[in-house]
Length: 123
Image (tube, rainbow, N blue to C red; front, side, top):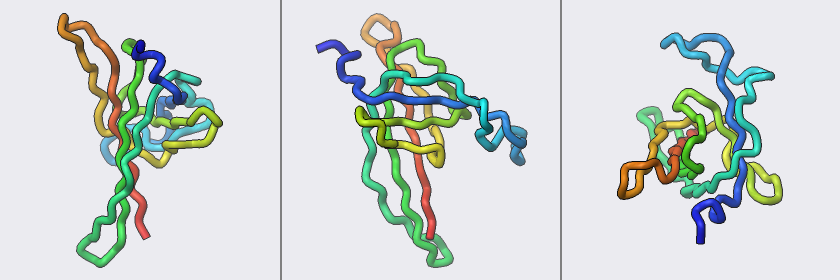
């Protein structure tokens, strides 16, 4: 089975152009920031786990891995949404991309791109 046959989800990526945060990076997604649309991918969402802060604040952290074909132009400072075959949102804009990794085959060529995301929800 070809790798591309496993990419049953689609993604949209956004290049942020909103106000700059304290590190000089655009923090918000603005209308018109859509960069890539309907990109084939596969998302594996890990169940969220509870974390407790110092102030007894309940926090749930959900992580996901998203796999793309080689050559997809995605960066850690992009925003990402992923949808299943029925159009239901799997990963929303409230997630943060924590790592973009180019996975290579035995010859050193890029086989696929892996994107790790994290979503933090607090009470």
